[in-house]
Image (tube, rainbow, N blue to C red; front, side, top):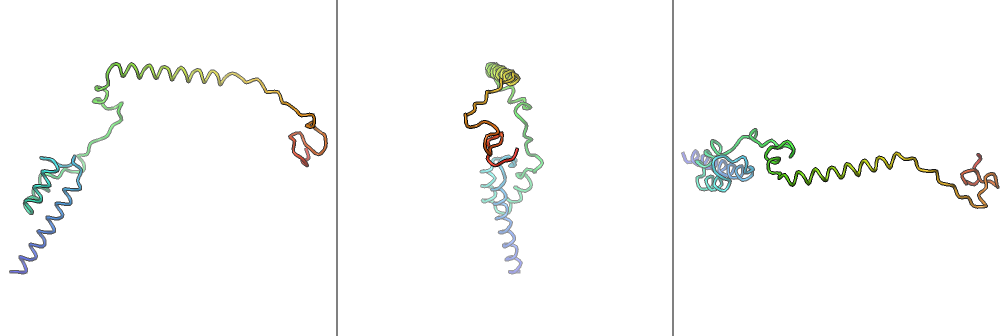
Length: 139
């Protein structure tokens, strides 16, 4: 009988430690009923009963995670934006589009070819230089 009680005490201690660790590492969004601190107190102060309550009531499922959305898809975020912030953002976008259009139009203009300045010693065909100025190259 003493062995059975010793084994039950060991199993209860392992279960108690496991529930403390499980409760501690879960994110606060997965705690149901009360907050994380209260669940920790329940699990620690009521060793076996607290663990049973934790697994039956307090531990939320992983499928209940919050789905993250982009800010422009979130109606709460869009509702918090003020009209002045929207107007400011629209003005900034308009200015950026104008700058982009100006850069595009500048890129379409052909650049006049630059005149090549030559030194008197850089005449093609003189010596062993080719037209690119490389010595010894046969052109």
